[in-house]
Image (cartoon, rainbow, N blue to C red; front, top):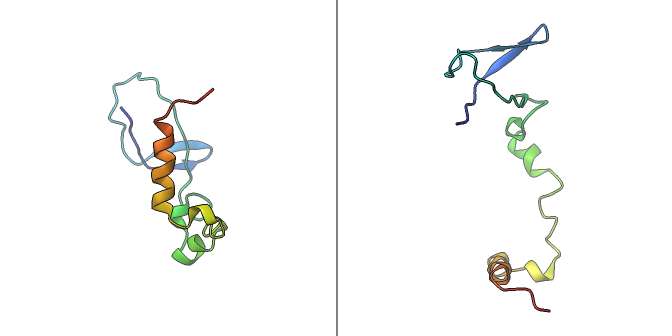
Length: 84
């Protein structure tokens, strides 16, 4: 079971918005993803997101002009055994 909750850091401690829906004493693994301008890409405007370097990085690849065909061929190769 995975639970996602929102919280805020105050004086170096994590303060959660709501109580956790877990039994008392449950051991957990915590992963922190900051929200906002310094955090997730979701906080970027559309123009900022589209301006990232990875858009169009394969535009000059002649073997990927038809991306659907390229993926289809790659998937077919996954089902074949390697030849010696």
